[in-house]
Length: 263
Image (tube, rainbow, N blue to C red; front, top):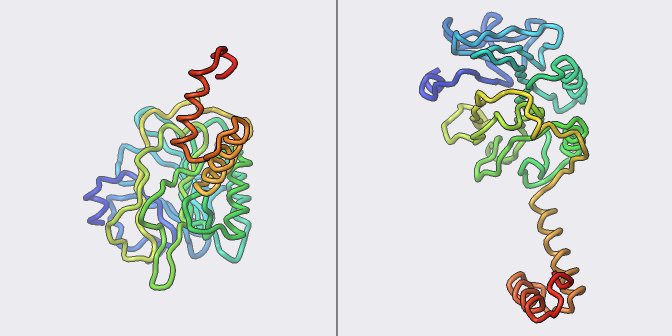
């Protein structure tokens, strides 16, 4: 609670919360918490600002996911907290239902995905991560995780990035300042912080529905190396390092009688 007040957070997404008497433990009455009461809940959302008008979408909330409709400063969007059980794969179906229900509106999802992928800056990609990565792309969603020296999960034996922050087209421009906090969380999972700006609207500049591809640092390095090799071969340059390539290509352009053709 002290950390929430210190950071002045308006909304907190929680996975695997500590429960007490059908509520989230250590949450004061001044803060509203939203959970499913069907069974032991593994996902929750807390709002701390009374000016945020939040409505729990019960038909799309269960012990593994909580979806809220939010209105703040004349802005309407949706937010969800989700927990993906490592032994099951059914939670992606719930995302599908959320996308259909929120169609045309902004949607942000905070997920403990229990999946690893280099697409969100993990050191490896496992099978769950590969499936999740392809699903995110197929649904025109965006992973907002940034590269960091910290990881979202760490214990004595392992560290990984299994927490995901996902948005749709409408919130791509609005979600900013994503980072893994250095503050102690009293858990194996680190605290993730981000801000949702006030420019939540139908942004045609980012409302892209064409093909998308999963791009990783490793793939970019392969692309760069292959591009240098092709350029060196096509222009008969003996070295492939960027400095010599740039120098020799510039020299060929300067010495050419037909600059347009050389370029």
